[in-house]
Length: 269
Image 1 (cartoon, rainbow, N blue to C red):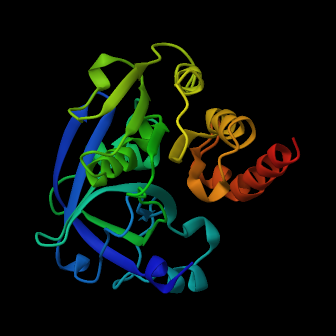
Image 2: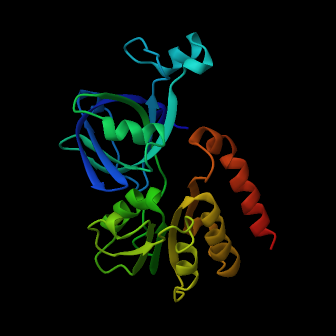
């Protein structure tokens, strides 16, 4: 992790907006973003740091000091979110949160956030941006990947050949985004519509692909791209943002090992 990714910023809520029944946007701003910058990548992410229940941290907030002086159960809880947009002039950072009822620490915070509320976070990280020289761009994911897919579409040259497939629950969750094919899974499992849609696409050589979302369907699409289509690893940005049945703490602790195992299994075929 670079020094830039470790740097902690303290922003304040500027405004919130319910984009769809299952997507909430929170726009952050304030003097605490004076040293924040993003824009090199379209999959920039930040690590949100939420206080443990009932814990107040000394100011100025220093997570390293907290971890050195407080018991582990009082450490901040980390949640990772993609940057939807960053306005360096207004110094406003937009984050989109997927909502599933009252489940999820970050989602609950997003719907209750009020202007002026503080939020600590570190970052940004990131590593993908559409290659303007690619013959074809394939962008595929579920709701969790939508902010990065939307940012990538905004960065594509007008004439760039691309296919963007986003699986959502239903029509009410569609957003006003050009170039997206919306796939409605209804009551089906996450990925149940997206995977066959990707496999059914007319294949085009020279692909640069971005595939993210729930880990199980990402595994299937990765196998298809790496094994059946022989797409070089350096032409893929592909990883599970989350895994069904796991919170971020559980998933992040095993994600690297899980990804390495899947990659090794697929390389052996």
